[in-house]
Length: 214
Ligand code: ADP
Ligand code: TYD
Image (cartoon, rainbow, N blue to C red; front, side):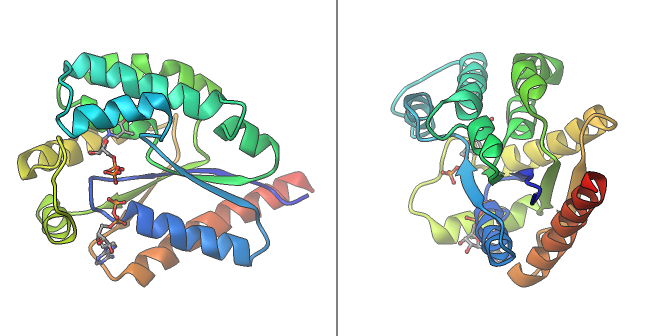
């Protein structure tokens, strides 16, 4: 039986997560794995409320936003149609562009991180990633990319905020070490070099799984 993994991609806005998600999925598929690529906020009705807030069409307190993300995440895990748990059960390797470390980092800038970790405890109990891949980027570089690639900038996409979020990611990794597998790669390099690092880590995990199974 081929093993399957749950991989979360993390990093500040514009660090290259969705680019790397696509490349990793293509490599896995080429190697014969079935792959499901997904993302948070999702495009479920809960995710749509979040996007309304992000596009400044609706106002909400940071606590409400954090709780909406936690609900969106549970739905992402548990929905019967293409929920992460169901896809894993069916043998897919699931790559998620963001998971709960995004909440720890983005909401941890506005409220105590322990509150955010507690709010996401159900998700952590249901499923921890086999690896959290963190694409580390200087916030200044991310802002350059976001400014050149998009017409509108979302709620959290300011330089000051991205600096805070990067700091909170590092704090969250420290806070959760021993509980989580975290792989850090330097995102300020050509796309292919990052993809090679990611591929090396993922093949290592897959080979370990294969060894454990025999
Ligand atoms: P994210 O999903 O983390 O927001 P994206 O993958 O959408 O980031 O990348 C943001 C922008 O930066 C896109 O225009 C993408 O083509 C570009 N990009 C991604 N990775 C790199 C890289 N390593 N070097 C230069 N540009 C990149
Ligand atoms: P992003 O991955 O950038 O989506 P898109 O490419 O469609 O803009 O995520 C949107 C924003 O959501 C981003 O600024 C990070 C934020 N976010 C949180 O604040 N908390 C969370 O739990 C998650 C998953 C994302």
